[in-house]
Image (tube, rainbow, N blue to C red; front, side):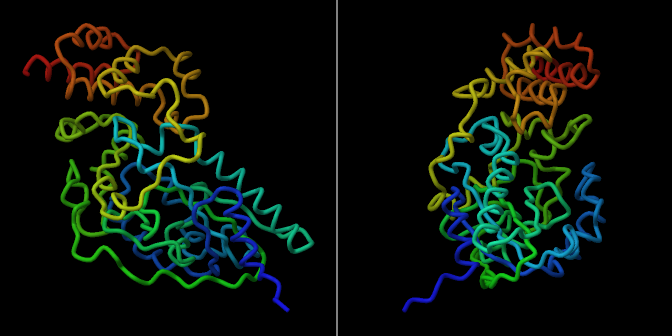
Length: 345
């Protein structure tokens, strides 16, 4: 007689049925990379992301964010690494992944309750709590830390989101992913437009285009603006060149992550012009439920001015000149820089 499936097997099966592309189980406890993370923050590599300093004690031990929990079901969801590159990073083109993944993790929680036959205390996390998700994911067997700091899975690449469901339930853990399959490859380090990597697996976020276009709230350093090229929101360059992505990245399968109308099919210059001329009501309507709201309209206009300075032409001078009257000093300053750059070119 065949033995019944374990709770860990059931949890993984439920996760796959809900549309997650990877699922593994980890036991909670001290985070192996906590000291490295603290050192990274201490060196100033996090820039203005001061929220990363909060909850440091909880971040050092994965049992602490939600007391009483002992196991985690860690999941990954692909966002379509085969989609063409463009001015907006692939992850941000559709709906906000936080909302979609938390909803599915809560459904997974309900299914676990049903499998156990009683309510199980727990909580879903998707980039929202003091958790080192990569640490948990490696412990759950989902992949290794690439030299570009992303988690890489040997069957999926790295174009995926991570989430975790912490549970007050003793689940049989999966074997951690111990191998480093990057080998001698340094493509991701060599191709970075702003030289943001200070070494393998060591990123100075203050030079990273994703940080500059999303997390940085003030002026983009002038010496880095030209290096941004046509990248308006986020950057996929270090993932694009990874051999594990060129071989194993998947087609977009989640409709919610498909580019929304305001972005679909637009080149960098067209999108930058649209954003620079956009009103606040237009922005609120076009980007409702989008991760791009994080930069706010002022940040997107700042980025758009830089892109036009890099890839625009004389026909964009009038639009940039009108931006000199924008109520935001940040936008005015970057528009002035773009006008000077176009004139020089």
